[in-house]
Amino acid sequence: MNLNYCFKVSDSGVLAIAKGCRDLQVLILDYCQFISENCLQMLAEHKAQSPECLQKLTTLSLACVPSLSDMSVLTSTSLLEDLTEINVSGNPSLTDMSVFHIFCVSIKLQTLKVADCFRITNLCIDKLLYTPIGSLKFLDVSFTHTTLDKVSRVKGVKIRAAHCGFN
Image (cartoon, rainbow, N blue to C red; front, side, top):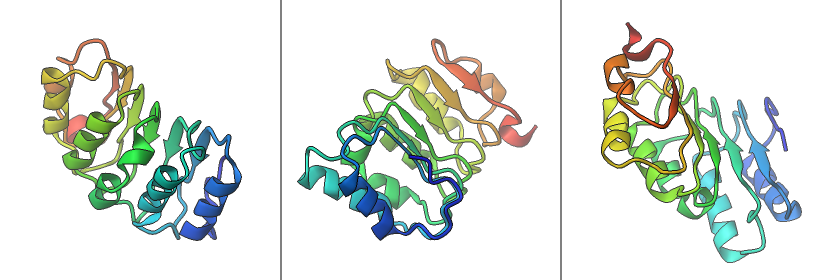
């Protein structure tokens, strides 16, 4: 379900969609400005309480959602577990901590996009170098504080790294 630029969508609206669409596979909430920091946690709690809901969700996109923070990512573990694609690009408050958490809990993850998350650094690349994520196929770290020399060492993952380190 693509709710890209739906400015009036709120946490309760997203939760109602999750409750009503049991076969939901894709949820795109890019630029939804009225989603709060608690939205991911509410979805995760709903998935934990109603196992039949959100079981087919594989793709979650939250690009440019102003309230998205490390805390919202950290409190949404059960929601992230089965996702194969996560896009949190354009969220400047996210740090390496969010990337580490996603790497740890999203064991089926194939695509992670964190472009324009200015607080992402080489620490997330180090995590990939020393603890590879077997299913990861694509990582977008464009416009982050990662460096091309570090990114180039990652093997087996296609990496988009435009303007890394702002060089």
